[in-house]
Length: 408
Image (cartoon, rainbow, N blue to C red):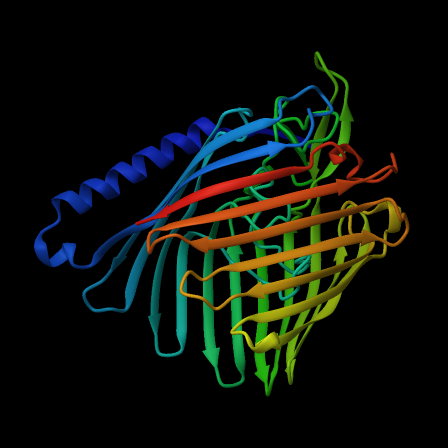
């Protein structure tokens, strides 16, 4: 097993150089070229307020600033484009949460029924609300999102034939991104901090070349996807390391192969969803996430849409699973007011069926203030009195986060 150390300084330097280059190109381009370049993005001011001090004595307030500009260039001929999306967060509490990333630096060209993407990009696979089992291309940016929905940019070559008989996504992934974790001073982290020294099963470490393939097709009102992945497992295992000045958890990235199936179908007002996988890695297991969303249109003579969501989550490893959703039920409500400000609310609860005292609840709400300004509120509640549960460490990490987002 080999060791590798993350280098945020190198990533930050790369981010600075590429950003400066693109800005210089935009400033010095002639009029005809400037018409093909667009600058957009967002800047957020965020504050998390925890209900109690952390398990390791961390404070209750955590503020940060986020910048995520997007540079877009399209060729004059119209058959090629380049998108560059850097990301940077400055955090008041956690040095590890102060981090930068290149979310996207992707060139796209297309001809006939084919598309080719080369660079750093993001690919999302999945249909369920509470878990995305088949979504294995990009690494999770775990200090950004508790649900793994924020992803690190993934170097890739992505070829897509789009045919009447279906769409094929074939990807070659030449470099692996290690998962991010909260630091010693951060919140929502295990009792022992996670080490920046990772172990790999492959002798090539992060330079192992991974491959992914997905076939998808619309069959009437049903969208079906069948996927295969071979390479470095994005979900690390952990080993106890007592060799340093303090004990840490050391990530171990094993090799894996995974077969996945995702299905989504519309039956009247019902949206039926299924994701299931078989993964062969350091351990072998089957995973399942399935359920429905039923939409009530215009209740009480309103313009609202109300979605009722229920999903079941299963992992064949049981209490040995590396994820908390080994035998759980998620129930939630999605509310869209369909007003001019685009107000939306999502709330839900995940209940562990093996331990009645283990559950978590979330709230997401957002609305526009102006065309360029938006507010968002996120809240999480963790209830856990079972020391053997994976999320026992988060029992004091209930929080509310308020964000003000400016789009340009």
